[in-house]
Length: 356
Image (cartoon, rainbow, N blue to C red; front, side):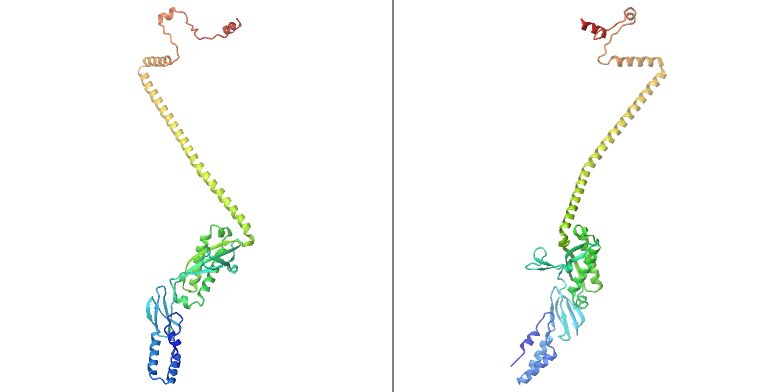
């Protein structure tokens, strides 16, 4: 006796794409039961109907969204939790994982125990990675695109092969960005700019086709020239590094010399300003002193002249090393002119004494 337990077990499947038995299957099974002549065939048929109705119960996981279709056409969207839809073939449910970050490799394929480009093994796909730069050089670009589902309805119904659509858009966007970039930027400092521009362009392309995908990041894994000219590019890169090093050394020397020169210039300017102020203050003092003396001279000319004479003589005679002889007027009239011979040297007498 064949009870078709396989078909009965298929009614309890919950995965996306499961096909519980339709009305034709149930009728065939019922006819088989009736043909066996077993009593209670109606109860068995009723049980099958109940199982068929219960097959519409489904559970949406926390990382999923339920997309319900009726005769293949979108009907509604359900959130995580238990739900019910009319059994197949009337309604069906698709449960895409909307929180999963999907990873797409372009220009290479990882294989082995690790999916990481840096840790696992990989093989190159040159038909995807070889691109032409803005200065007409060939460069090998390998990169990763990370994305997740933004609109599950658009993702499921607008594009038949979603992964291929994202890959084509990513490859086209990267070729356009690389085609506007010089090779030295692509190999050195322009990688972040390339990643950001490519991500924005991929998102724009996918939005225009309503793919329902949100591009999270574009990561350049390896950017290098073709193997045939890699040695030449290494020499060019080494020359660029030397150039950068020389520039940095010159900048360091300039940063060391300029502050010292500015400091020395400031010292000279301060000294000149101090000298200027000193001279101005001295001249102003001398002028003020002269004007005060002039005022006294105007008031009493003879006394002022006498005072100035005495002050001048006092200044002269008080200097160290000056020998002084003081005579009164009477002594001056009676004395002979005084000639001091102490320490005097007479060239003629020196020569005569040397001959003797």
